[in-house]
Amino acid sequence: QVQLVESGGGLVQAGGSLRLSCAASGGTFSNSAMAWFRQAPGKEREFVATISWNGGSTDYVDSVKGRFTISRDNAKNMVYLQMNSLKPEDTANYYCAAATTLMGWRILVRERQYDYWGQGTQVTVSS
Image 1: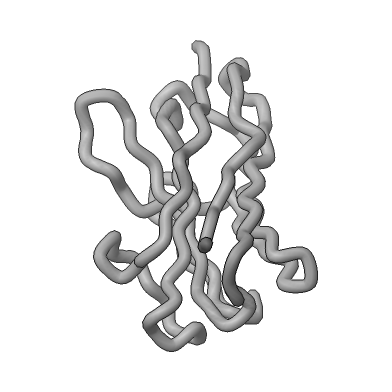
Image 2 (image 1 turned 60 degrees about the horizontal axis):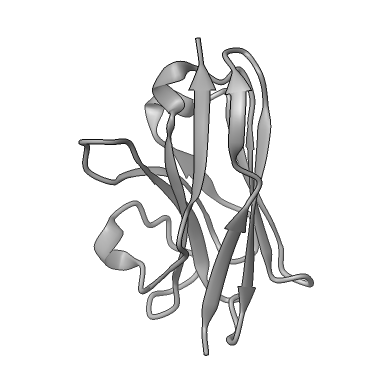
């Protein structure tokens, strides 16, 4: 059974850093685009970052550009999100997602393009 499990969330002060991890199992994800989305209380889930199958292409929402970095290790079936210079507005539940039905070289930023999701990991940034 395909499973995505996020970890690494927590409470951090503004300006601090966290590294989120996503462990993929039960399927072959090395050919799939992967992404991170987030959902803050009372808000819709939004795209944060995506990475192509080989890590050659990435994209980010404007609000995290220059602060967040997405990466992957296909040998370990892992995807990471390094988050630096965190702000209170980054507080949200962060979800890992995999797009297994579309070409892995594509940059995919829409929720409906992703068919597998993790349960999420909470990130709270205090001011």
